Length: 102
Picture (cartoon, rainbow, N blue to C red):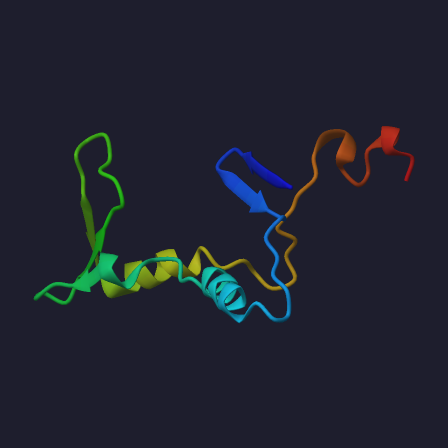
């Protein structure tokens, strides 16, 4: 009940009973985890945001420095628009495919 495909992972086998409070707390912590760890984001003395990368890029870059507005724009780009389906179907699974018969 687990899948890992093209950088995305789904773990549908994770569950806990009503009396497993410790496990439920851990599951809630995993679900509500922020997009970035607080320790990786800092402000420098010039007021710019410094983001430490998890792993260095090929060119050796370990940090990204940007204005607070640019940082907020990048974070906002990660949030999906309201009423937007996050799963898209292509090919024969697409909605108006003639072979689908819908």
